[in-house]
Image (cartoon, rainbow, N blue to C red; front, side):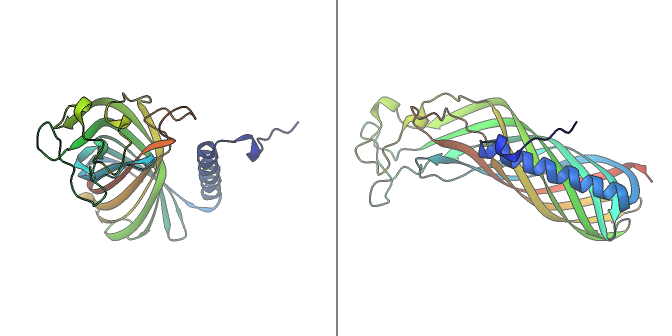
Length: 258
């Protein structure tokens, strides 16, 4: 008896992306297990860096970025070398702040002045998550001593911790008439979905020393597949997903080396 899951079973684009990634990743691991040179190295450490976040709204909201620090724990298991490609599984547990900052402008791209306060209207929302990316890593270069280049990619999951809103006007007295963008529901709506998930990937360089460990520099991008607000046809937003860029430095030391 044969069992199969037809690709057309997944009607949601998000489901198709996740299914495709898992299928390709599983196929990749199977190939390595058959023809690669086995490795058994486990390294742990820490990471930290600079985070730049926004939210992709539909309809569009003019906005800037939320910036801040991201950091946490890192772990990598190196399992295979296939010709010149070193194959690993890499994971992190990080604290990161996501969200958005609005550019509240009139039709002439000038700041909107609140009639009650006489100040430029400003709004931002910061949302803290515990984030868990789990990525496949491919590296090329020196394995034990020297420099190498790497690529990573895989799913990421975010667990809501807290949020804060910064605004300098009363929502009841915002100057909607002067705004070029009349969509304002996002400024007072509570989050509908507090579990975040998406796809992340990055490139970087690593310097390895046989006794001192591994120093890594990376640029990474995250695209959320889930929306923070309700997205039915009766709701305001068709999409409200996170986007995030990170510039990171990580240090790992080997605890198993074979």
